[in-house]
Amino acid sequence: MKKLVEMKVKAFTLVEMLVVLGIISLLLLLFVPNLSKQKEAIKESGGTAVVKVVESQMELYELKYEKKATVEDLQQAGYITEKQAEQYATAKK
Image (cartoon, rainbow, N blue to C red; front, top):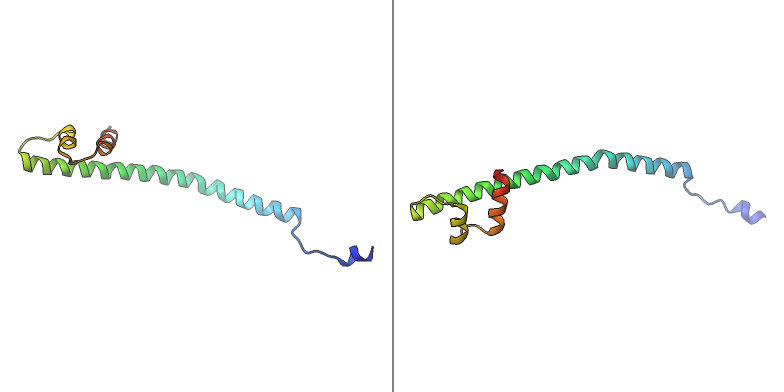
């Protein structure tokens, strides 16, 4: 019995652990919505970047061939990729 009394182990209590878990969950509730908003903002800025790239490629095509360029013309001439054309179409909507 003496050994049990002498062995005083320093540890966290259940209440302390619950407080820490509560603080962590509160922080998660604050930061997760902001992360999803950031993801949407990045997608929007990426879409505008693709639009600018495609429009600049259209200008280059028009200077070279002296005719109005379409997205299909740019793809066939190798100015843009199929993925860029798809992103351009969705960003312009």
